[in-house]
Image (cartoon, rainbow, N blue to C red):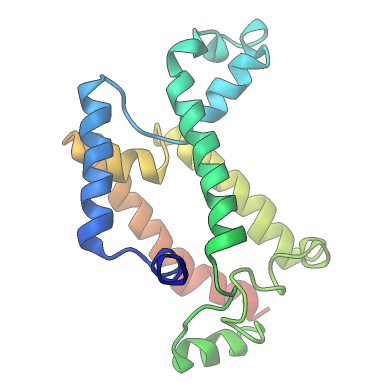
Amino acid sequence: MEKILEILQSPWPWYVAGPVIAFVMFALLYFGNSFGLSANFRNICSILGGGKSCDFFDFDWRKQIWNIVFLLGTVLGGFLAWQFLMPDESMLLSENTKLELAELGIANAGETFLPKEIFTFESLLTLKGIIIIVVGGFLVGFGTRYAGGCTSGHAISGLSDLQPASLVAVIGFFIGGLIMTWFIIPSLYSL
């Protein structure tokens, strides 16, 4: 049992995770579905009656029940992995990365997944917190809707389906991520 727990606590190698993802994509294609978690926001709004006030939410959400079940499975799987399969919350970061983060004011980088300097209620009430969490969250939500899907939908499902729009979206995601990582976040934390 200890050996099984040790195996489960370590990251899956690419030659296991890759075929599992490919199997899921082939199954979705076979059954005529496309993958994307952000579509569940529309599904949930439709379930809660959003179609009464907005045509965008007026559709038969029952045809998307598989996606809602997938979302619930993702949340449950993440909780179970965090609760039972994580040996600790530390991350392996290079010393150079830790020094760069310390220069930006993030102490003890790598000790937890979510740095306290960003992900606490107190930091939310600062200008940096509002910009990073509130404005950033709005931009992610707006960008997801504007791009017609999220990173998982475009990068995994859209590229698997050879959709040109997904290729453009994924390139945009990477460019935006690089700009954010190398220019915007360092500018915000140097204030």
